[in-house]
Structures are given as structure tokens and as C-alpha cells.
Length: 429
Image (cartoon, rainbow, N blue to C red; front, side, top):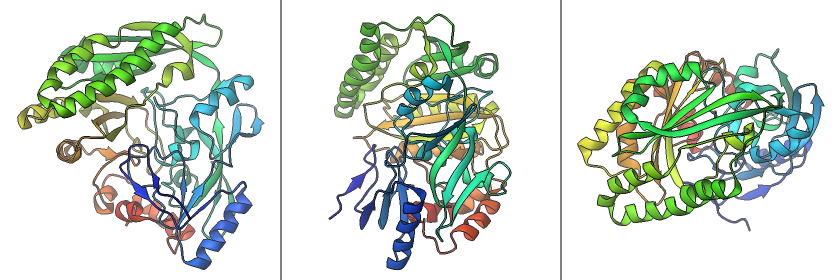
């Protein structure tokens, strides 16, 4: 008997008919053959860190944890198993003197899950994780094992395929020489941060900011790339524990629970939080700066906007919160990314800015997210595939110039919808 599966945010759950744990592409093909015979659909699942139902598997759930680790190294190109978690990469890549070009701030995901949903970091000159893929192995619905590279016409679809085209069993990453980051994190006046957003995106390597609603302060994060030989000046163990474990997780969880019980206290709590967090400077290996611990569970919606629209959209959100009298304890996160050519990438063909909104997982998010989503849609925003949104195929088609090309590839590779589920039916038709 299989047990109920749920995602990290506790927003999705399912009890699969069966769970399979293949250890090779050939074993994946055998699982698919058995599923076709039994009339069951198949979904690969990574770490369960998507907030949407993209990985929900009512039929056969594929656990790819047996496909992990480094499989091959050719110069700066490293082939790793699809079930390798991002937090494992530093240990695997460091002996090679390599690192990923860019990362997000959460490293719980598997590499295939992160790339298939469009996970990204921040930096106006840097693309999302899927754009760092140089090759991949895809097992399709009929059991074919495809080795795809940049020369293949399927490649722009397969690198960010939502799990709709087949099962990725390994990816080859174009890595870069290991590097360090000089991090400056400090609170700044909210209005000044908004006014300088576009300039700072272009003049720093990796820039983002967080804004707690009901405050006039933003917490900025500026990371500058340095060679691996640069002096390392990490946070002390006590400082890192106080900031990243005690304040950002233990204390923040308490604040969220107080805010849920007494919403009227949230503005005061947010003002206090914005004064007690941030304001630090250090230099460390890139992975130790990019990623942070996230133990407080939440639900998230994130949209990619034309970068020049970000400042106006944030102001619209501030007005929306005030007009509705909402009390929002979680901050907004604002980032940036370079354009890319992946057909379903949220940054396809345009200079992109990202705005993410969150709610504590014990609170209702529906009204807040839908109100903010209306703002994002007015700016031709594209929703992150792994985060909560309400768009369907009809609306998404208007946002992606190659949407129908992707659907044609899906029809070719999976004509019977072996890899479908309710979420993919909604977003792809």
C-alpha cells in the first residue's frame, strides 16, 4: 500500500496507485511500459517544493532519488542524475573547481524538478537554471531514450518541459569556475529602493530586495562576483545562527503564528522585523551566499514581468493591500533575470523582473493572491510554473510566442497524455 504524498507547502496531496524508484533510464522505460499496460499516468516527483500540482501523481509516482550524483565530466560540462538535490551540488562540484553560474535562494529541489519548473535566481545578466543545461536524457512515452543537445530541435522545449514531454534521467550542466560572492545586505528606505531598482539591476551582479508590507523599509541584497582566490570572510558561526536560524526561522515562525492569531499586530511586527534583520556584509563561496534556510512553511505566487514594469507593480500591490485592509506578515521578494530562448521560460525573449508574494501556510492566500494576480496580468506577467497561479492554456498562449510549438512537441512525444495530470491539463489544454 502506498502512502499519501504531500508537497512541502502542504498545498497539494495525493495517494498514488504505486510508487516506482528506477535507477536507470532503461528502468524508467520499463516503468512506463507497465503504466501504459495498466492504463495509468506517470509523474516524476523531485523534492515536492512546487506549490502547484505540477508533480501530483494519482497513478504512478516516479521517485528519481536513485538517479543522482556525478555521471560524467567533460571540461566544464558535468552530467548529473536527475534526482540530485541542489544542496548536494557544492560537494559534487567543488572537487572539480566548478560551480553553477547562478542559483535561487532555496536548494531543496532536485535538479530536474528545478529546471523543469523554471527555477531562477537573480541577476540581470544571468539566466535561470534550465538555461544552464547543455544536454539531457529524456525517456519518452513509448520508451525511447533520447539524448538531446543544443543541435536538437526538441531542445528548447525539453530543457523547461514541465514534466509534460517525458522523464528526464540526467542533465549536463554548463558550469563555471568556482567563485566567491561579496554580499552586502542592509535595510534601506523603501521609496529609494523602488526608484533605484532598474539601475541597481544593471550595475550589480546579483541584486534583489524584500519588502515587508506596512513598512517603509526594504531589505536589499547585493552580491558581487569574485574569483575563488579572493579572501574568504564568512559570517561567524554565532552570527549566521542568530540571523539565519534563530531570527529568520524560529523567531519568524513565532511572529507568523502571532500574526495569524492577532492580525492587527502584523504592521507592528513587520516594522520590528525590518529593523532587526539584514545589515551585514561578508564574503564566502557562491553557494553559501546564494542559498538560505527556509524552515517556515508558506505558499507563494511569483510572476515574471517586463523589468521596467516592476516598480509600478510593487506600488500597485502596496495600494491594493491598503485598500483592502489586509494584514500581510510575509514580505514581497523582487528579483531580475536575463532573457533566454527556452520556449516556456518566464524570461523568454525579454528583460525580466520577478515579484513574489507569500502567505504563511496556516493562513488563507486566495483573496490576496488573486488580487495581486490581477495586477500582474495587467503588466503581461507570466506565472512561475511551480508557484500558485490561476491561469489556463487560453491565457498562457497569449503570453508565450512559442506556446503552440511546445504543444506540438508534446503531441509528438506523448500523444496519449501519459505524463499528464490535472495541473498540466489546465495550463496546456
